[in-house]
Amino acid sequence: MNTLSGIKNEFPIFSRLINGKPLTYLDSASTTQKPRCVLDALMSYYSTSNANIHRGIHALSEESTEQYEATRRRVAQFIRANSEREIVFTKNCTESINLVARTWGEENIKKGDDIIVSAYEHHANLVPWQELARRKHARLLIIPLLPNLAIDLGVYERLLTEKTRLVAITAQSNVLGIIPPLTQIIDAAHKVSARVLVDGAQSVGHSQTNVTTLDCDFFAFSAHKMAGPTGVGVLYTKQAILDGMPPFLYGGDMVTTVEEHTAQFREAPWRFEAGTPNIADVIAFHAAMDFLDKIGLETIEKNDQYLLKEVKKRFLSYPEVTLFSPDRVNSNSCLSFTVTDVHPHDIATIFNSEGVAIRSGLHCAEPLVKSLGVPATARMSFYAYNDLADVDRAEAALVKVFRVFQKKSRKVTV
Image (cartoon, rainbow, N blue to C red):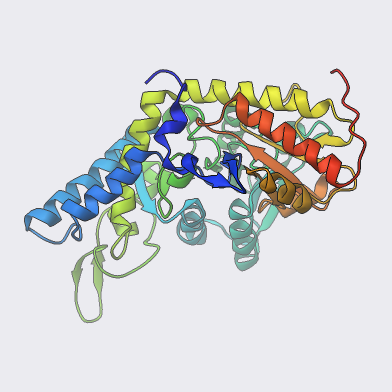
């Protein structure tokens, strides 16, 4: 599978009509749709192998355990980790980040230390650090943006000192689509012996990730934003760091020996996966990664870039539209916009009437959206199943916004 032609046929949901119109799904930054192979993997597991893992010696348990651990190995391969033992399964990217805050952060952040985040961050990569800084009486410092919405690397380098313990940075803004210069950010942090956590939720299903060459210390993401099921998160951590982190949750399966007043814990990564995990969805995630590899992440990235360029050109031709996606700044797959004197929720409602699914609001990045000088934005985001016909329908929906709000559409050549 080296082309995206006909790829929508692999996704059963696209047989639906929304308000009598073909579904045009432009909300993949929120969650992606699932191909048939992932749905089949879920059904197959529950139909043929359903059992708890790591505990039984009967055939079903051993089969389930092998499939679950095979997915751990597959994740390590997908993001180019050195070992599957650097991979912890959680329920989502948010939990992965909180795991770091509640384990490594509790033990390594002290009074007077600095935690640095960027102005791009999703609440999941901001609020945990706010709370950790509050508990530890540390400082939370925020890297500002330049007028062109690129990260201000000059200010960042001035914020880095011997007090810096952690830098937490997104790999791609879920509002602006902007991709920060991660290598430069990570290298600068390591020069002052700070650790770096990367929120890869928006990037890992759209472009190739190599955590080893990137040299980040932590990397978090979710399966559901890369054609996989909901309820599966991943935390990559360098082995030397992970081995020194205490457990996050306590209970069954993460222990080796339990007495009345003491317990001994399993080695990493298993000591971070207490209780029965989301076995079926982890196993189905394997099928999602296979699917993406068959398409090719490079192919997906090129499709994202093509559609982003095309929709920007189309929407910029309407003077009533403001795009929050500057030129000459590296970005991908999503685009936020507003229409003069029309609330983004109204934009999204009208788009939905045309069968076009977009998101509106603060996108779980309230400080960033407020800094743009607007109460909210509408957002389109693309994935492998989107094509030029979807851009056509999005533009038609935009024209309907003008019509409903009695705005004279003055399309100009750009």
